[in-house]
Length: 294
View 1 (cartoon, helix red, strand yellow):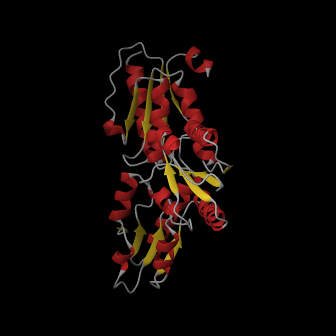
View 2: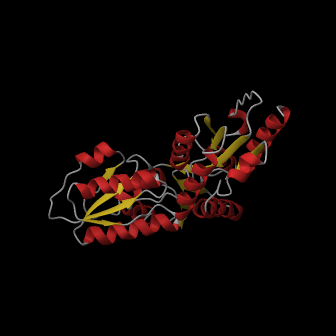
View 3: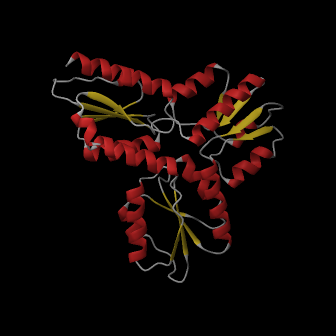
């Protein structure tokens, strides 16, 4: 990363910024279904990006939030979001007889299978992640016994279950990798027997690592992502620890960038639900700002 600073003023955009495999697959699938025609419904927002959701709504795609919303429908396609849904929800949706297209990220589906298998063996399931995030809500719904959710060190310290019961720990795919290790370490220190399955996806780990490296050498760091995007919020948190001047925006219109002429490097990264077009627009705006101060 030294070359970034030594080579003069520039905008550095993370190679890993933007759509991950699972998100691209989900978004492409929805657009493909739109082309086929007929009523299209997504069970919850297919991804956490307002511009993508707005575009899909203009094309007639409707978001539903419960199985009850499907009552009375005789035709249509229901698309299961990339975050996944609970076993109960999936079974209820399929029971409607409507066409179902599952765009659950394969990495999330792997967690569902792990939780179902390990809970059936009698192990306590612990999910490291945000309890109110749709991915975590879906994961909980595949455990045959009540699953615990932990997001903070305090929650890890306060966690309690019978000491003779083995614990299977999984993670929300977009959780902060460093925090995940800390929370698992606390559980181990408290004497629990743990089977740890690190389910943070490779794309998330790569994106967080690259963002960390760029932020460490940037004068200004910009994180692009939706307001409700968990992985974008984690990127902001990681970048701000290394670059105090870190901004969290959704589009180029949100970026109010004032430079004093001393800046050499503006870094950019983006969450997994951020379209390439938005990243390029922000990059162009930053380049124009930086050049005008040269």
